[in-house]
Amino acid sequence: MKDLILNLFASKPKQYIQEIKRTPELMEWVNSNTLTKSTHLPARVYSAVHQVTDQCELGNTKKFDRFSTGFTGCGPASVCECTKKQIAAAVSKTKLDYSEKKLTEVNDKRQQTMINRYGVAYNSQRSDIKHIWTKNKISNEVYSKLTNKLWLDNEYNIKRRPLTDIAEELGVYYSTVGEYCRKFDFKIRQQTNHSIQETQIVDYIQSLGVECVHSDWTVLGNKEIDIYIPLAKLGIEVNGLFWHSYHPVIGKFEHRTKHIEKTHNAAASGVKLIHVTDYEWKHKNSIIKSIIRTNLGLNTKIPARSCIVKTIDKMQEKEFLNAHHLQGYIPSDSATGLYYNNELVMLMSVGKTRFNKTADYELLRMCSRDGITVVGGVSKLISYIKLAYPKSTIVSYCDLAKSDGRGYLKAGFQQIESTGPGYCWTDGNTVISRYRCQRKQLQKWLLSYNSNKSESKNMFDAKYRRLWDCGNAVFILNT
Image (tube, rainbow, N blue to C red; front, side, top):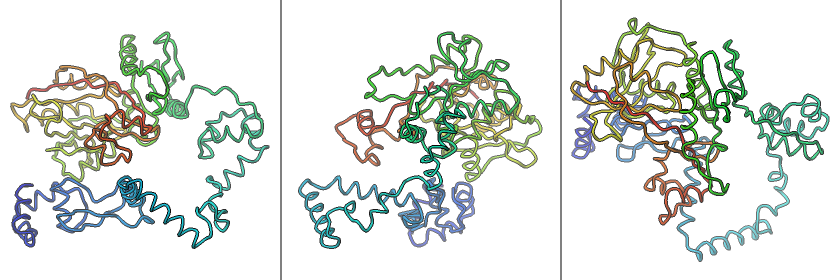
């Protein structure tokens, strides 16, 4: 269908929409595969063919230009931050293309214009706007507390609150609070090794009525488990993006297998260990909470025999996966769901294999609605897939940071291998996948990209850090 539409557009660029309207099969395919809610048919056709949405990264709706150019900007920079980023990237790229002579000419012209208009060469020298660029970057309310010695003394010294606790209340970084404490000559206490995220997860587990140990040294002996739940024999490692990642400047050995080794050591002691990053806890909070409840057996349980199996359209597939799967949506050939009382409670998607060239298909995504466990759901969906893909080999990958893969074995899969640890890149606050950092992709967005340098050299030079995971278990199903 996709090729047919592209051929229609190439041969009849002014009549292709009318041709699609006249062909029920094409209209049905467009409506099933489009990722936009727009009622504008050319936009729906473009979305279905190219598998793109009309939403920018911040959730604003982009304008549809034409089929050859697709979705364009979602508004001026004053309305949408992503437009501002695109403009900044374009300006930076233009500057990188300038020669030294051209840069000198541009800077000289800029300085002369400033002198002619304001009598100074730089904005920072202008007395008329000094009040703007010297303005405090935090709110007046927060600033008034940090500069109030009595208030800060009461919170930090008398109440003995940690810097991280005060910082979370004020919405600033903990080092900012420490800076103001030092200005008042407060003696800075040795900081605890417990991060804010660890404490929040402990509080959440206890709110479920489950006892846990914060910082356990009994299971692994000479190694700590951040959070241990004895009753469930479950350990949770909270891996901060910055502190668990590597950059050569720190001068230490890059221990690539430390997370998976810890997982194996815990398993040898009969403890299941899951790894959660501070980024996941902050940005995928409801999913992480659901994973914890699943491992504690506290989710709402629904029997698969009470569910109806249905094929899911692309829009619903995307919405469900982005809401309930840690890795979000990925294009697929088909998606099948379990419905309970007309509500989608579990989804499984299948598509072409991405990595294993010997398999016919790949089970791409599988997840349940947050807070729900469909008992027997995996087996019921697998039975449906066996009928949909007969005499085929289906491969799937299990993230060992979150699961041990037992569910696959119960559903009839066989484990064929475990991959080594994979990695992503981070600046300490966000996550960038390794695939976006391949050299052919890197040159599209990294402003300091140098074609003579490797991926790692480019990323390390740009101040990014490498974070290693636990790898994947690889499973095969012969239908």
